[in-house]
Length: 226
Image (cartoon, rainbow, N blue to C red):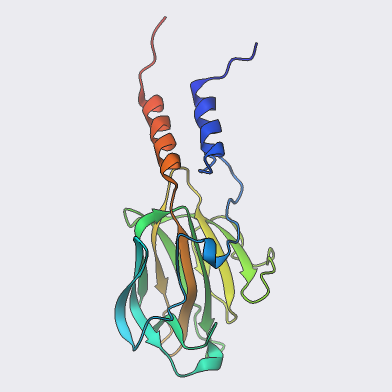
């Protein structure tokens, strides 16, 4: 008779509840329809240029700082070419999530004005604002085609380097039991712009949080000596 340990039961419960599979070395990101994300914004409700803004979607929210607003140069930007979050001219930007996310998804690009312009760089933070590595899947922003050859595509990445084309990124924390609490966008270009649109994220299901808590409890419980 096969004996199933407590650890195996916890792992099975995590899988069945849709939670993280701890210890997996494979990317667990997967492209989500915008409407299925727990939080989503296309920045359509944002008016004017603001140094920071908090956008709400139900009980969840995201605070964007750096530079945000309606821009006039339509062909350069995504969707309706009017609303997006943009960081420019040596102003570092950040996004802070109201709750730790299991998945973050967005489209982004860097507007290179010359061959010597540096690319914008995105790093991801946990809920304690510490930099973390992430698993990233990269898709064409318009067609949804997986871009597996993109240099940002893969596991255990410490940052994303933006390109001059709109690209869709699907991101999950690489570490077990780690959630994404925010991201930072750095652009050391004095004239170019880095922009994000169609930003969304998912948060863990209550059952997943409870199961993970049970796993920690059993893991910390002292063993009985025979």
